[in-house]
Length: 202
Picture 1: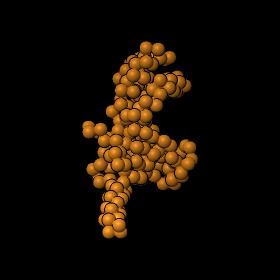
Picture 2 (picture 1 turned 90 degrees about the vertical axis):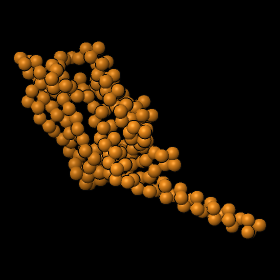
Picture 3 (picture 1 turned 120 degrees about the horizontal axis):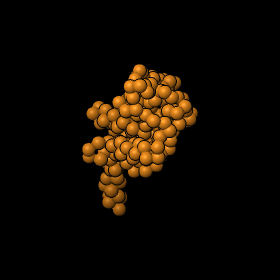
Picture 4 (picture 1 turned 180 degrees about the vertical axis):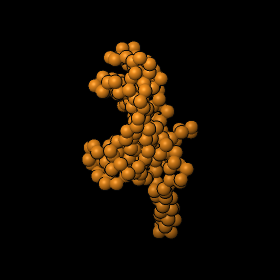
């Protein structure tokens, strides 16, 4: 009996070691770069921006708000799937944008950008997904509405003073890496310093 069990146990050990290697094997440089690109795209795609070449009329009409929400969700679908896409409140994001634009008129956000300032690989899954924690520091361009020229002028950039850190699960869909789930994890400073787990906002 012992002679039968020993090969079986040895086989299980080999399988366990192989699984552990797969799960904890760090991402190669190319995959990590693609994942970071997906994270920046995901975070900036969730924000509304107004084209600088178009005049903005406030308050936004119901039709315009619906159009913005549709475009926002379509843009996010390039970087998200599953719960990360289904749980996104595009309508709420548009309402927040409209409220901010009305409060800060004649200034309006015209573009979003971002960069990963903190990154930590957590693990891979046996189904091919990866789990990472990352802080994306966002930047936004604002411009002033010129009523005479009917366009937005005086463009300038501003950057967040820090970054929220989220734990992301991403899956390779064949064409690109997409965020499947996301949950808040902590915060960090503008250059990835002063990481604090559990803090809700920087």
